[in-house]
Length: 486
Image (cartoon, rainbow, N blue to C red; front, side, top):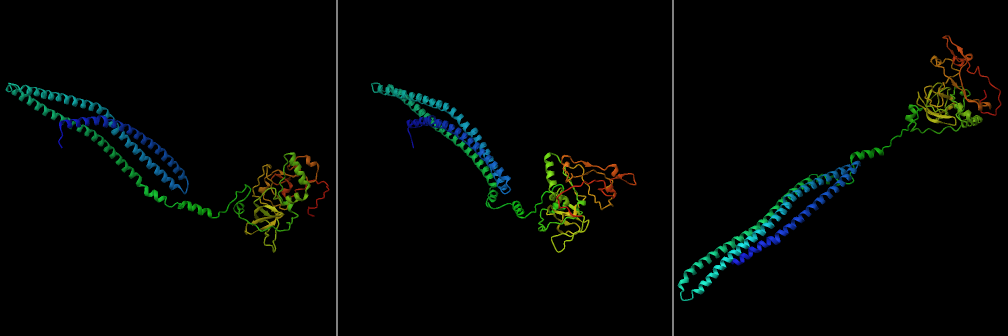
C-alpha cells in the first residue's frame, strides 16, 4: 500500500513517540516489577529453607524411633533435595537480576535520552527540508504570475530552473521521510528484540533449572514412595525384639553377700511344699552346737530390748536353739541324723551332711533345703544342723567371727587350734545386775590354759577338756519350763 510523504512522516513521528511515551515507561515499570519479583523469590527461598529445615528436624526425631527410622531418613533426604532445588532457584534468579533486570534498567535510562535526541533531530531536519521546499514552491508561483504579462518568454527560463529545484527538494524530502520512518521502525523493533532476547535467555535458565530440579526430585522418588506404601510394615529387628519380649524370662533376684551360689541360682523359682504342721523337735544337745551371736548393746534402747528378750524365755530359747535367726546362712552341716519316714516333704540325712538352704526364713523350727550329695529337697528341724564353717557371716558389730567348736569333737584339726580368738559371751539370762553392766569379751586366763607338748597354751576345751570347767554357776529361780529336762 502506498502512502503519501505526510502519512509516512506521521508514522515516523508516532513510532518515536510510542517508544518514548509507551515503551520506555513500560520498560522502567517492568524493571521495578522484576526487582519485586526477585525479592519475592528470595523471600520464598528463605521461607522454603526454613520449612525444609523444620522437616529435617522432624526426620531426625523419627530416625530415633526403631520402627520409624526409615521414614525419618526419607524425610531428611526429601528436605535435603528440596533445599538443593531452592539453592538452584536462587542461582537462577541471581542471573535473572544480573542479565535481565540490570541490563533493562541500564538500557532504559540510555534509550530515553537517545530517542529524545533522535526524534528531535528528525523533526528539525524534516522542518528544514520542508521549509526549503515550500520556499521553492513560493518562488515558482511568483514567476508564473510575472510570466502572464507582456514578456512571458523572459521568465520561462527562471521558471524551469525553479521547477527543477522544487523537484529535487521534493525527492530529497521523500527520501528523508522514508529513511526516517525506516530508522524509527527499526529502533522500535530493536528494543522489542532486545527485550525478547533477554527473556528467552531467562527462559532457558528456568528450563535448565526445572530440568535439574526434576532430575534431583525424581531420582529417589520411587524409593521414597515404596517405603511409605505400607504403614503397618515393621522392621525385622523390631519384630525380633517384640517376639523376645513375649518369651518368659526367669527373673534372678540379686542375692545378699551372705548367700551362696546355689541360693542365687535356685531361690527365684523354688516353690517348696508346705511346712509340717507340728513344731520341729528341738534336740537336747542342740545348744552345744549352736553358733550364738550376742547382740552388743549400743544405747539404752537396746538394753531395754535385751531385757525384754531375756524375760521371754520361749522366744529366746527358740532362736538360740536353732542359731539361724540371727545370721542367715547358705549352707549348714548336720550334727544329728534325721529320718523322714513316710512323710515325703521331710528330708532324711546323716550326721555331717551338707545342706544348702533354699529358704532362709525359719518356719516353726523347720528349714527347707537341698542335700548336696543326693540333690533331694525337703524340710528338716533347724536344731539338727549348724552353720557350715565356710559360710560367710557379715556382722558389722562383731569384730572377730565366732568359731563353732563341738565339745564332743576332741579331734579337731591342729590348724583350728593354732588360731586363738576371743569369744563373745551373751549377757546372763537371769541376773538383774547384769543389765547395768556392758558385755565384756572373755579371754582365756593363764589358769584356764592347757599346756601342749610344743610349748603353746590353749584353753582347756580346745584341747579336748570341758569348756565350762572354770564357769561358776549361781543358784537361780525361774519359771521357764521350755528348757529340756536332761
